[in-house]
Structure formats: C-alpha cells, structure tokens
Image (cartoon, rainbow, N blue to C red):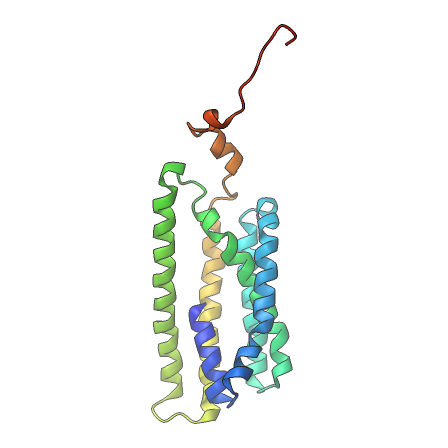
Length: 205
C-alpha cells in the first residue's frame, strides 16, 4: 500500500508533469473513500465477520484494475476519481478492522504485546513493499527514463500490487471468522466484578 502512494505521486509529477498541488488533489477521492469506509467498518465488521477484509481486498483490486485503464490511456484528472475512491473504500474496509481480527484469539493479558508485534510487522511490510515494488518501477524505467516510460513502469508496479492484494484476499481465510466480543472478554476479566454495581437485597427483594 505504501508503495502505491509513493509511485502514483512519482508518476503524476514526473511522468505527467503535474505540480505538487495538482498531484496532491488527485488523492482527495481516495481520502473520502477511506474515511467513509473506516467509519462504516466499525458497524459492518461484527455483521460480516472476516468477509469485510476480503471485501476490502476485492475493492482495492477493482480500483487498481480500473486505474490500469486510466494510466494506459493517459486520461485527464477526472478519470482518476472513481478508481481512487473505490481503492480508498477497499482500504478502509481492510485496514481499519484488520488488527481486531488478528488479535481475536489472543488472550487479553497478551493483547498489548501482540498489538505491538502486529504494528512492527506492518511497518516492516510497508518498508519492504516500497523497496521491492519501487525496485520493479525503477527497473522498468531503465537507466535513462523518458516521461513516456513512467506510465509503463507504473503499470508494472500496479500489477505487483494487484498480485499481493490477491494473496491478501486468500490469506484472510486464515484469520478468525469473528472479532473478539469485547463484552464477553471483559466479563471474564478479574477486575470486571469490581466494576459491577453492588447487588442490594432487602426485605422487599
């Protein structure tokens, strides 16, 4: 995911010659889609279970496939709105609830440590993705890149992103079907009894 944003920015500014402001404005549809889906996923995840992760991955793939067509014909900026919005909705549905599913079977006493491990792995994956897919982009450009080569290089990078998202779609089957029910987990915690209101009994009880 991190490589996608870096390379799209490179393509827009260097390949298409857009200003930093114009390139930044291109990402607005993504931001709207991501924010909307992230907020909605809090309600959808308990209903859909881990299917929400696969829905997110499928939408991200759909957005990137649509973006391939846009890049291939060097379309105007308006053509980027729908693919980036779909990609943002997909990422919001995938990324926002992901950690909760990963930690669903982790005992509450180990949740803090496990969350730290997940965050570390995510950061390493982002860095590795930038290095590997960025390398694919650089090799496709060649030693003396022309502006026209940036589109072709970006298409190659998108193909790698699509492939990795397909792996993510399949890997989601290995996660628990449901998020942990925090109310149930909390009820079993030793401190839960201390937080319960006292039960008063009296002659009228």
